[in-house]
Image (cartoon, rainbow over all chains, first blue to last red; front, side, top):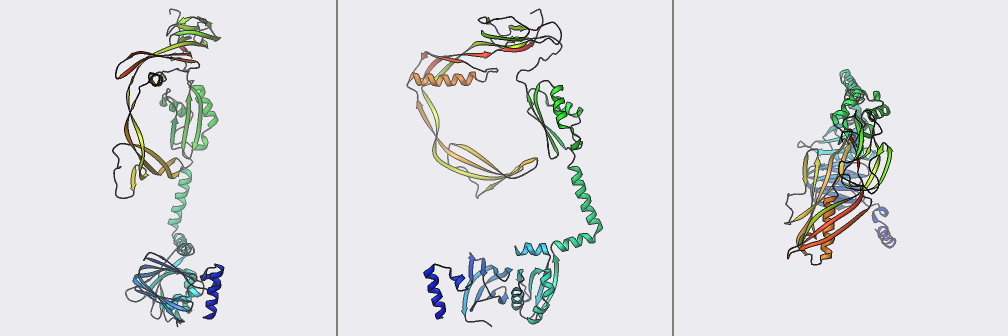
Length: 94
Length: 392
């Protein structure tokens, strides 16, 4: 974590985007209906009320209704439906 | 974009059952492939679309995720082509349709005549039909320069003709002469005065002048006689004369005027052919009692002859209010009277004024109005052709 903190400080000092330096996922929501995730690591599970997406060093749980994937590629994941909650879980998922 | 690329390359819609569908999709993604329209079904299975080449490679990923993958349907351009090629009637029909389209686009479907105001359009169309320009002929059979020359030769009233092939339409644009040839060819033609005045200049190109500079002439008086008695004898020349117009104009002392307040309200509609669709709900009336409407049209779709199939129209309602302008000064009223008199005189035919002199005279005044006599003096070309006989 010390390394990450120093990268964080450096990024702030240089004004560089954190997601590029730290290889973080980029999430973008359009209201409650569409969620775009760039730099993801794939799916863990999927059903119409819950989608679990693997991220670098963690897991993102998306819960809602009528969830489905619009697009799934190695760089981009687009989830649509009625999104109710996003929950980040630390640690590397199985 | 992914779905479009998949359609172009050919895609399959599959059902993934059992095991861990999420892992299956992750393997697929890690191998650099894409899936789209991924939905979970009520029975726990998952349906998704993927490129056909991806499906051919997915057996190993499915086994590792302990899933079974079954094709529900195929789609996209390659499958469409294959389906068409399997049906000889289908592609033969497509070829016939294409050929028919190409052949029919080589034929003239409509002939438009633009600009004919004095010449009957039917007369021009009749000549066009004789020259082979009519619906049904092949486009390349029309000799455009020859048709243009022949139209000018056969209809002397026309001074300029342009024949344009626009898609399957032939558009014939014409311009007519300002001075028409006589209606009854076969008799000699003289130049007569189109209005009364004092002659200021006479130019004779053909014929004999009956008036000279300084003469006073009346409307209809012969100015230049034809050079002979033959049916083709026609006087040619020009006669200028000083002519007068007189108007009585009343200018009210209190003039109501509509002025803009600066407030405006906008309404937008889309016009599709004969139908209009309101943009913005609900449809409302402008919130002003009096207004002027400005209209702006922006074509959205235009194709070949149909120049404006769909257009966006913006109506800007500019609020106005009534204001009473009082005219207290007689000089100001005189200028207004001159403008009003001009508006009445200008529409007179043949009013090509070169020198103009305007006199405005106040002849009476009441508490409500000024009364002006406006005399306009100008030099005009007054000669016009007319059939001539010696008896006149």
